[in-house]
Length: 113
Ligand code: 5GP
Ligand code: ZN
Image (cartoon, rainbow, N blue to C red; front, side):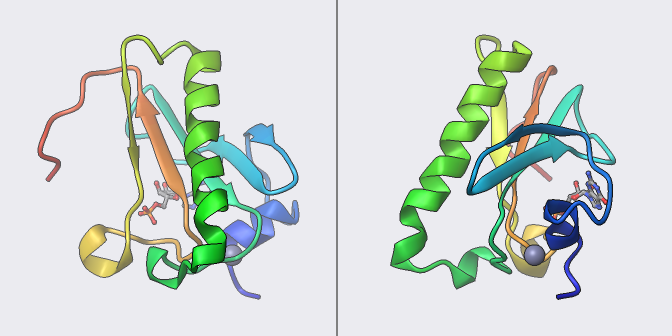
């Protein structure tokens, strides 16, 4: 499969991995938009949020809970952070393997652009 993040999961391309378990892997974004910018992804390929099924509900919860764990570990939990998942073109998705952005270490504007 020609998917960047599947290749990253398979260790075919390098990544600065900060967390891994059987289902999830998290690594630093190559072009960070904040002092902390980590991507949390399922190891299994799912192209977009539109492709989630009811069976994936626990997996999505696992992504969110992993974000919380990492936020606490890197020390941004108390000041605050943002999690974002982009879907398709209007959502700003550029890599078609779902991923949760964990952003922190600076104040965030709202609404986003
Ligand atoms: P999206 O725009 O799809 O929501 O987010 C994709 C993210 O993946 C972007 O923030 C981009 O910087 C990041 N990214 C793209 N290619 C790579 C890569 O090869 N390694 C890492 N670590 N991040 C990447
Ligand atoms: Zn993939």
